[in-house]
Image (cartoon, rainbow over the protein chains, first blue to last red):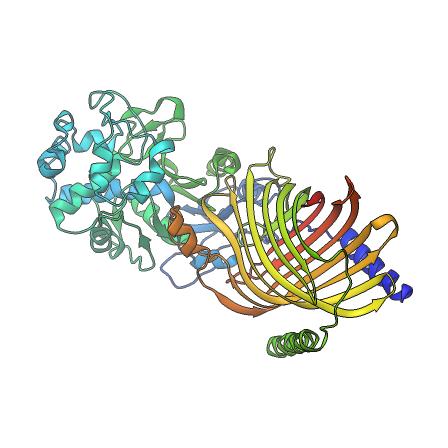
Length: 358
Length: 270
């Protein structure tokens, strides 16, 4: 009996003492960046063929695969001269087909859709007050009747919508999402102060829905996704049915690149003018000083004069970074819910890839 | 071995152990003189180290402290009954972080009845069935600031107790428990919504979503505790203990969550 007791005790002690968990690799092993032709319309090429320094591109992609860098990276794609020259999915090869939340990069889609709505006559002009488009929403907010589409597109509504404090409640709000935004205090006069927030794009989304009779997501399907042959997507709406203008569009990385390439092509895709080239030129100009963010801002596009480029940027580190002068597009996707402590420096990747362009 | 054969093997083992437990419950009804008889309310506090790996999110080990508030009701008669309530709180971090921002909450409740299997002088071994509920929820603000991650289990399993009566009224107890059958819930690895519903109803719904039935190969948790009881103030008993917990709950997409904890504690038998 004592033998059994001792053996059982020893077994348990050994099992307990030897137990611990181990880290596993976050990323796959690096195996180069050559894209695969999948018959999805992408023309495949290589950095050397597109007059890029392959060694610098290689350096950027190896950086992405370091254990302690870009830990939540999901995809990196480089397009030059309209061709896909480099592509990796460090977390899972299946990410190539996976739609994922592009977070605030969504705002730049809202911008493009605004351009389409203007071109098609659903909206009159950027100087049109939103209160003319949705007068009922402003009945209880007379101090906000001067806010125009332009103010909303440049984050200059003056409304005190604080993403840190309000975004969570905004997402879960059961009533009108427009009322949620307008119920915030009018901190400044419209057009004076840039204040990045998730509320202003909701006013734009509501305006397009009111005038087109379609949710922004349905409007996008008809006027943007269908021409670009994007079929796998999702776009969340607030509980009142108004599509979130600021976030929660889900796309695959290659479709995100397709949209970016359309921007580089001045709004044209396969010979069809999807959005007016003048709109893209205007929306991606440095229209507003973004202050502490270290960049300028257009119509829901971040503008980087130092690169002669612009970007759609989203939480988690998402980037669709276009450099028209070099006919270059970089798409970086990451786990979309990672805090900024783990974003890492996209600029380090961008510097290498931009420098590789001869 | 093929996956189907493996699952069948687990199923046969689980059912066999349940039959044994049932037999013990029916035939093992001899009164066991386990202790001083009667019933006890036990309140305890445990501290220790916790490790967790949530493969639905990132396959890195989160490490940190864990504290557990514990209540037990023990009744000794023709069998030994135990009602257990544990409330855990843990703060954790990975090697990639500089401070323990990840938080984990755990709530476990179980009921077990154990019957005498072996009695040899001052030693008793008891075994019997146990039912349990466990909620373990974690929030990883650095890794996913928008969603919670959980492992909920409703289980039917086995537990055993070993008791050594020592000198001067002191006792040494060892507990071992593990599930055989479980209903378990884990988050979907692909959540195509920006934020969780953080209302009470939302948590209740989410943390019980996608309930699946499984055997110990899908939802396994092993708990071992050793407790040394000694008298204080004449008739009152106090105990120091060591607890070890291991759990592995399969994810709906195949990515399990693991947890290992080592704790020492102090409890008072009221």
